[in-house]
Amino acid sequence: MNRRQTIPKELRYTIDQFKRDFPDDDACLEQIKEQRFPGGVAVCMKCEGPRKHYRVKGRTAYACATCGTHIYPLAGTIFEKSTTPLHLWFHAMYLMGSTRCGISAKQVQRETGVTYKTAWRMFKQIRSLLSEPDMQLEGSTIEIDETYVGGVRKFNSGRKLRADAKKLMPVLGMAERGGRVRAFATPDVKITTVMPLVREFVLPKSTLYTDERNIYDGVQQVPGMGYVHKRIQHNAKVYVAGDIHTNTIEGFWSLVKRGLGGVYHSVSQKYLQSYLDEYSFRYNRRASGNLIFPAMLARVSEKVSLKPSSPAEKSHSV
Ligand SMILES: [Zn+2]
Image (tube, rainbow, N blue to C red; front, side, top):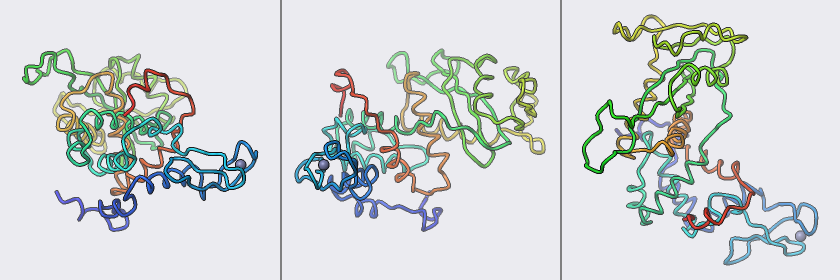
């Protein structure tokens, strides 16, 4: 599919524009500096007040115009400890944000020339920016559904896992109709796991659409929430009855499965949540064309961590 034709002009951010905006490491550093310290103005520790800072040539530092003390815009970001050039990080983020189904580390390796291992580690870091743990659903019409996604092959035989293989992992999803999704890698899909998530992320008095599985029994009785519950009888091969269906969340599942199947081939429990976060991040911004890259970039400075990283983490830096 040629997505270019489907994205309105104002929502397009082409690879040419990207390369013009970020031709080299300096341009990327400047971007991060502007996000964190607009106009180069930051509080200088020595002057004890806001001061303008200027780039120090050949370093990732900016110096206070008054006293010369350095600030480091990359400190606390995912780029801080990296030996991979900044423009390659940006390129990987651009690629990651520009397809609905995601992109593989292999593709990034091919397009940027980094090693597979580096591409994979960059992905891991970038994905860590995309989780939105506190995001509550705001729509009053919510579909809830569970699914299973494939795990790591037990033996490296190249054979496909059977559906009943033990490595399938449960995922619970909630989708606002016409809006956003949240997806959770859960240890199981029991009532005791599902209900607290529903209560935490779905507003009171919402109408919930689910299938007939008994894990959704009793949502109408959740104290103080006043949920209305409508169910579709999938067992009876009914998929839509008036406004009763779970097509929205199922559409998201097919995106996730197509992506995981085509891009990652296998996913372990350890990383499943971060993949779900990546897919949700893109899905929740699907109306922004491929302006997803700028949204990802914004996360770099929103998620600055000023905790010193452990030596173990350091040795895994990319
Ligand atoms: Zn100063």
